[in-house]
Length: 258
Image (cartoon, rainbow, N blue to C red; front, side, top):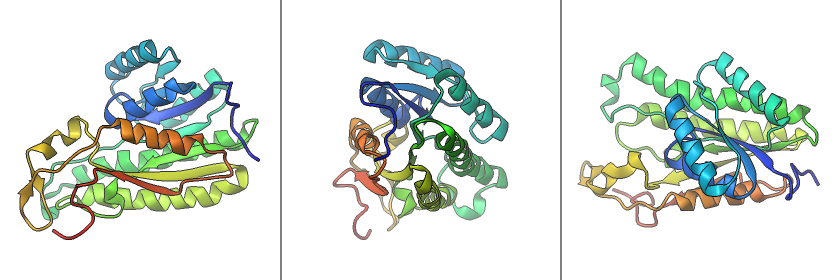
């Protein structure tokens, strides 16, 4: 049975977008479960503050490593840093995401479109590519990749073309990674999140545009539930994989019409 690092040995995880929101919650939960965690994002000050606060709370190793994941050279340097510092990578969480204002598709600029593609899709691909190289070469071989797909990976919101397109593409990347990685003991799964309570979802309490044109408030759930779900996915031996999982506010208007 293929395994990563032993239960008594610190496993190594990289969480993109790990300085705030869902990524931070995931990083902290992993640290509390004996992972040495590297968090990455564009804002060095935010990352360093988050790493200090979380490591103080969990007593674990959390390192801040600023990186623009849409830049191949920066991503390559990030993974070289991980290889040099830790010698391996057991878990990659492709969490970083970007969006643009909810405006009609015909009003989007090319720059807005590309900005979302760069982070949400290209960034996930570049990190996956480097993780595959490292996980194939390390001893013991293998590891796990978990992608943040969002409920937009299956069901769009109005005026969300760039974000929805990238999240649909993440599903394809997840399946391709799971297929290409399985010969090398690399598992890949996807978590689709619906209305986790973060700064980005605060507006939902006051009302957001629905498919029927109405504005309605939507319920949210504590981000801890997302972190717990990722911990479960990560806890499995590499012979088992959660390919897709949806964690959502029970009463959000996803299942049904309207």
